[in-house]
Image (cartoon, rainbow, N blue to C red; front, side, top):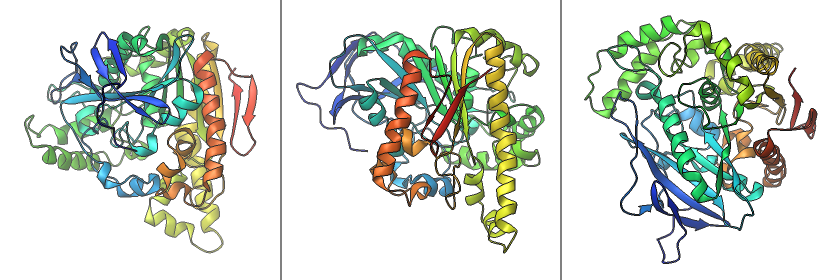
Length: 449
């Protein structure tokens, strides 16, 4: 992504309740980047940022939250090491606004990045929201939140759980308070999150303290099939994490996080994403009551939920052992294809369909999508994360990504614009045709019943 330009006398300014925000212009949009929305002491709930008494210079990208690198995922997405600048103790968001007059407040879309609750950042170049905001005339807010041991493990040693979820709620409060002054409609806010970000968005629907903060949710490839039955695994993880001193150096925290991940092994598919939301810990209900909580919440939200045709192919490619199996003569490809189909169904598809049916039957409005783009294209196919090059960034943002290595720029541009149009259509009104498709080879959707 381009660097923010030096502040000029005619730089865009927004007078908000948070303070005067000074942004910068970038090829048809106004950026207000790296805005601190909260502060967070280690293992403590976030504290909302008080109104500033001096101008907020929102001209630098939001730094990522502490995390370990995942080289295989970096390669798949084309994330470069130079993007990894971490900041502990502060939480940031970035706002992108079309640089054109508006006749009425614009819809607001809030991007919640994924990464198994251990990886990612709002302002990665591959997650650039500029094309979405510019093409679709919407305001997009990209939010960072705490990850891994610092954000999504608690209930041990008097350390609270769900801190990353509380961070997101703090960010939503900031948006609700300030977005109108930036041209947005606080009564028309859509969360859209991928993978763990989609899982977080789904759980924000039933979290305490979120009432009225958003109205729509786009849940992309959320691993809802492994979100339950995690208490024993989390308890074992907590035993390993309890020895960590609150004041330990950050590099030690990240080393212990790897040990905690190892302690989570042996719990089936759940072990593949050991960190996550924890039921029965604020702000979430106990596990036995989550279905009832989602039913109660259903009339308040429009939902667009879906999955890709070959979700777990991403993890197959990232595993040398499975790729060797895939290369076996005669049966290797068939065996791995069957494995991808079975695990895609169990972790993603089955529970997405259940979520949509429950939502509709409880009085909510829900659509389901299935993304086919890239299906059977070696080696990834229609894998987990495959929609991200279409929704976010520009072709240049994805130039180093193995995920789309053999896809030409014209295809990314054309297909991306169509998918962004569908996402924004849902964000504007919560309504889509009862059934439809963005070309047969890209995406199909239908109304849940």
